Length: 569
Ligand code: ADP
Ligand code: MG
Image (cartoon, rainbow, N blue to C red; front, side):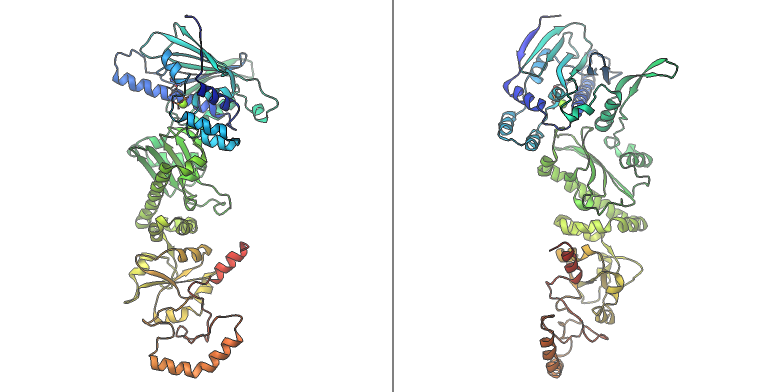
């Protein structure tokens, strides 16, 4: 072996190290995910290189990652037989932070006092390897680049310098040994984080690295009741990242099994969306529409069901940046290739590319629902019964998808009280000369159907949508119309029946005469009801009822008024 050379970390690297060590991360477990992800990248690179360079002379038949625990020495080692690093690679890659923008980032970090803000900033790029110093007070790295003979030993306490030394006889690949910090009794989180425990390591691998495509192995010892100890090597990860496989190679049973795994829902999903986007921002998505709604679908803090991965490494649950609120029932996985492992929720929310991904996913999910509506009406009816109310929230939240969402709306109407209709079917049945979609909202169906407002419409044979969800009150006001047809409440303003305005259905002369007849009554009613109504009008709306109350075009409906009152407004 060669002599030891002590080098200084680049100034910026030193600053970053200090930040990492002084716990920017509330969750120290992620160090293992970072090291495993580096090993996985190194294995990918070696395989690729061995395909293009036949002189490399390395055995690629058993590429894997091994985790080794030495309880006595208090070390945890992450070993891979991947591409490895040369001495120069090491100094350049580990001793320096070559990434552009680092200086500016550190500048901002120094200016912020707030730990959460610091974490957001750092989420913009990876600290990767350095996260080892969150749990270790010394890190030893042994590595040999494939295709070369010279190996290198690198060691540092993360305090400002590192040692490098040439070493003979190393296998190709890299091992990173963490000399774990003694459990810090003063810090609560350290007490639980026993990174020498088999159970703890299994749990972290399962959570963050289950879908890494290379086996992650660990030797474990079992002592039987009779005292005999057997040693076995277990593979800790499942490696089955179904989303990364071509659609044509995945069976429906596999999709359903995967769905069960990530949701613990025993009912098969109603729809599966599997897609891959290539180009400047690559990602894969595997999403499911469940067949039944969870009990907490309308709870205040119900969260999105989409998990974010970066190149098969688990990053976070409930990634709300990828799915709008009104699709919170959608479950699944998005694997984006070009994000930092440390990306934060806040950064994701602001990222333009992520917004693009979300738009595309929304379109895909709504498209799958539309397809189901056309191809499997029965299944669609159950999905709508489970999630229709939530989808209608989208008509309020998401102006961009109004048209797609309106196509999905399924609602009962006076046409056939037994069978819900779509707006498109309604439009297909509109009477000659009718250009408006009529609806009436109310607390329940009986109230709407028996409303005096219905009378004239029923008598004239106009179809009226019966809307009884509280959210219906809101979206009907928001949407500009459907397929060029205005939506009009029959309880509001001047409704156009028979081509005339309310009260003008009769010929002008006749109308004037009638108003003359009723003038005294109208005057008396207006005075008597001055606190309750704005105006008393003669109407042609009613056939059997004597009177009804009509809202101004822009008034709140009674249900909406009640909703706002309930919210304390
Ligand atoms: P990132 O993975 O985001 O590039 P890291 O700090 O995790 O940042 O790693 C820095 C670099 O060090 C990697 O890009 C890689 O070139 C090199 N490296 C780290 N670990 C390994 C390893 N196990 N095998 C080969 N190269 C590695
Ligand atoms: Mg990394």
